Amino acid sequence: MLIIWDFDGVICDSDGIWANNWAKLLKSEKNIILSEQEKRDLLIGISEKDKAVRLEKSFPNLKIDDGFKVKLNKLHDYGMKNLLTLTKGVEEIFKDSRFSQCIATGGTEYQNNTKNHAVGIDCYFSKENCFTADMVQHGKPAPDLFLLAAKKMGYPIQDCIVVEDSLDGIKAGKRAGMKVFAFIGAEANNNDAYRNICIKTGADNVFETMEDLHEALIYEYEKKSSPKKV
Image 1 (cartoon, rainbow, N blue to C red):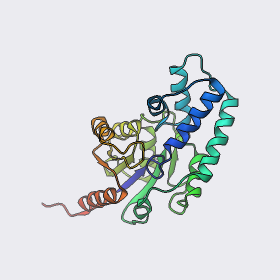
Image 2: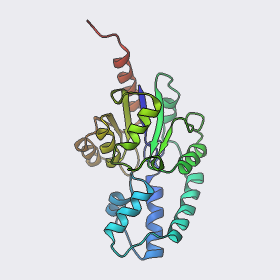
Image 3: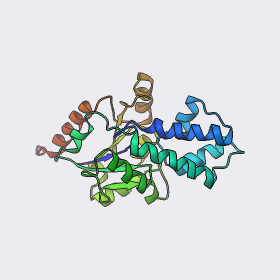
Image 4: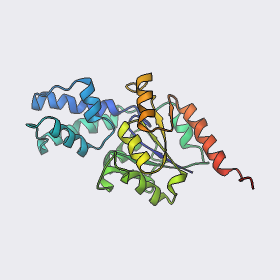
């Protein structure tokens, strides 16, 4: 069984860091002030490229130019190296040798490598089992990234479980034909309203803690591993 992890909002409660960086620069550089709902709708759970596309569509006079990107990357770099902490309990799942595991994230390869190293999980995840948005033509909610991960890891889609926090990520997992477990332990997501939205979007189950998620993954593993009755 293959577990395909999203990073931001799951492995680390970090979506808010990147969204706040975007919002800060949009205000100072472009005089655009985003509401909390606009930050969630435009900046959570998708690649940096897709964030720029969504913003430019939402604000017709906005152009995310190279100068903006340079300043944004400096903010992101600081956050990746200094502000990340692992979600409580997630490393216990990484240590569980019953599962094959990989990361499929909306970040770039550089961002993923930097984040993995910063929080000390590059001992579990290397270039062999990390897949990033710059490896596919279409990011989430398209299924491309999850399908690539399954192919490279050598698992059929029916043996893959995606762990996601964003609605676009849930959609991508379901479009890939995989089981999707939604994790809502991140501060911005930990409420009944978001739980219900995740279920309506297609999540097969929703978890607030890594301990509960781990139990569910073990159950799925044992179910797949047990001999079938004739």
